[in-house]
Length: 390
Ligand code: FES
Ligand SMILES: [Fe+2]
Image: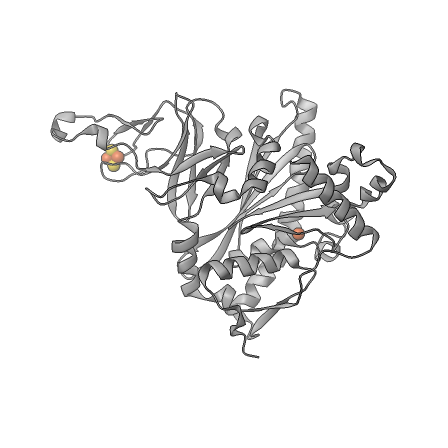
């Protein structure tokens, strides 16, 4: 993280805690229920946003060595993320060029991927290296039948890809200078992959991701658990960086900084730093581990569902069983808050989106991060938030 920006943000966070206030939007925002339930909008989000925007698919640490690979399902498409023998990570559509079965599955370390249907074989760089009974395919140029590659880039400790072939990817300009520098400075690439966990929630993805942009719900939902115990509820800074944002959620211990010279400030004492990377990624930096959370739609017929998937890297020495145990406990604690406490609330929101006759919902001035998300996504889609009718 950029130390100047972080110290400045800590100072702001301390000021708002001492003044018992929070960064606020200029006005209350009303959001049509239609924004969450409109089926045409769902299709447009897939075609115009999800399939055309750089998305982090894994931490680099999850494919750290040559021939490491992971298969992900993204919006129904099977995607192979593989580091070649040359150390370069590439992202492919995981579909065989013969008749379309998926050559790779799961995750692990492989020099080649053998298609389970007729054993066409691909290298970890995606090239087609073997066709059994090759004489039957005389005349085809095997160099043209490698796996279809997607635009990808390794940056800031993540592997990014755009899920449509032949589009240009430029993660640095997508993130903008500040977020790019901040994420790079966190050194996720130096971390060790711990694990990932996921669940599917019966709620629209836009309603789900808003949960990660406010601490207004901390007192009610997390009051008895770690987030509620350590964080100052309903209090945050908010800085928009293009479509993305950064929010500092002050911890109760931030008040200790009032007695500490600024040059000795430790940001982890004062705040939990949370990035929203448009459209569907949250990056959180709790002590000892880093976490990124994908909050992305599952396109499953008429059902409106969201996959919430958390990946963790640890910074400590993972050869030490005690430190590994501590990292695992940190992961469990974070996961329990999201899984056990946020999940039931998200289901309630999903129910109201499907069944309520209310015309709109209201986002408070204190929910400034939520307002930024709504305005950004609506703006990208040209969706008129003023269509509220009552
Ligand atoms: S579909 Fe892959 S080898 Fe036939
Ligand atoms: Fe929560």
